[in-house]
Amino acid sequence: MVKMNGLQAINAALMEAMEADSKVLVLGEDIADNEGGGVVGVTKGLSTKFGTDRVKSTPISEQAIIGAAIGAAMAGYKPVAEIMLMNFTTVAMDMIVNHAAKLRFMSGGQSQVPMVIRTLTGAGNQTAGQHADFYEAWFAHTAGIKVVIPWTPADFKGLYLSAIQDPDPVMIIESGKTLFVPMDTPVNQGPIPLGKANVVMPGTDLTLVSYGQMMFTVMQAVEELGKAGVSVEVIDLRTISPWDKETVLASAEKTGRLLVVHEAGKNFGPGAEIAATVQEELFGKLKAPVGRLGAPYCSVPFAKKLEDAFLVQPPAIIAEAKRLAAMG
Image (cartoon, rainbow, N blue to C red; front, side, top):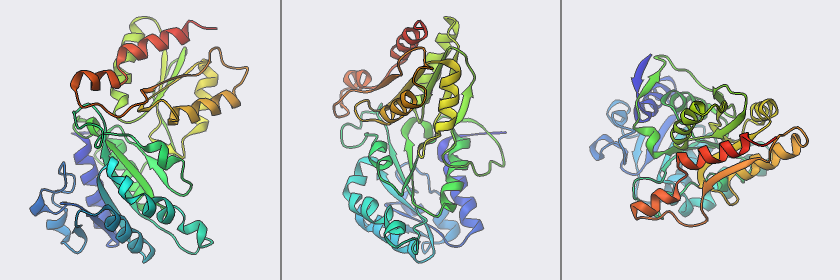
């Protein structure tokens, strides 16, 4: 095992993929070494090693980045396109939703678009309403694109390796805090299958499902719940679309209770889809209604106190988990 953070894990995955396959390209704003290797330095060292033909710094044009990546993918390359922040994907929604996600379907399977879109987001750093939104539900709602949100450095590396080799477009959302926290990571971490959740901790009283940087908050809450005698089975979803229904259903059937927690808005969020599916599949087997926690129905605030109130905090998770555990 080696200590590394998410930034280092992504860099290692890109380096490994580019060394193994000359068709893997990287493009985005300011990603070359003479420009800092991207907004948080994920691509440092790549342009020096592989040259600017394979590591392309682009103009500030999200449509151009995604459009070029789609064209390269259709021509046989495997581009990794960076959209600096997730809010900026809105500028390229037509390219992502109407082209990348649909070309295989609309061509009757004759065209593939093996591309990765990587983007950064997450509240907690006072970047406010146009820089910190989680829009995973938008893209999960679109058939033809996979949506991935890693938590640990091991997952970053493994999921990136799988995404780059996937024949269809994959969006990887890098939630801010996950990039900077060092964790033990296997030295030779290989690919991790997309669509497979990770049971982080076994438990018997309640199943708690989350992903991304909210996992840090969840683990804080679970530690306190353990002291209070509540046994929680923790599942890191890892892939939002397709989500691992089998693992979640098996766990929820075992514990009889489910709580879904995410940073994205509670209204129309991924938790709603998970809750509806579990209620349909396990109706009559649950000991309590499915619980959901997410952000309020508003933009991400700038003021620190408001931003703290916007985010789901450990006390809210603890209170809801205790409420559900007391039922049935």
